[in-house]
Length: 156
Image (tube, rainbow, N blue to C red; front, side):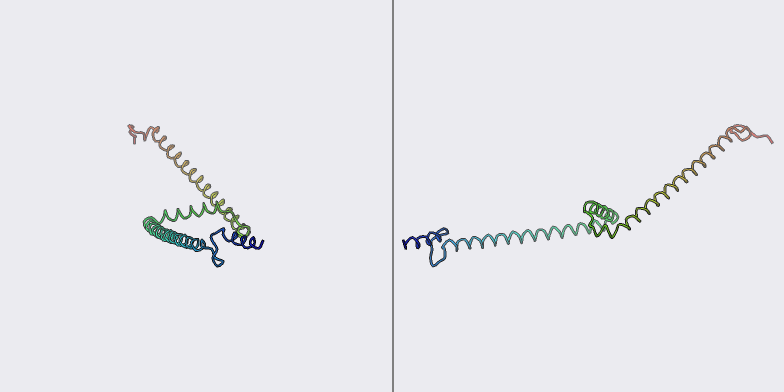
């Protein structure tokens, strides 16, 4: 039965290869494959990083050129992007607490400005209507007046 204990330890170690001094022959081959896989992964990662850096650099250059060419659209685009992000991202509790009064003030100010603009617009429309009605009234009066109408001579 003493051979069984020795056979058991050999069998346990032989799962990865023959035993030789407590080390497996397959372990050397396995570590070589791991080193190769690590090296290949490192090369792929380095190439991907280099490619990403180059792409980001080109995108930055193109963006700079477009901003220099048309700065107004860049500002409008930035504001639109900021608005979309603000709409999509959830508000934090701290942000809500800090800006709740500011938001209400902005809303009230915007409402007042809109109301003032609408009132001014209505006033201008009414003035235009009155001026047009007055001008039409004068034109009609001149057209029907016997002394100043076209084709009629006034007597003095």
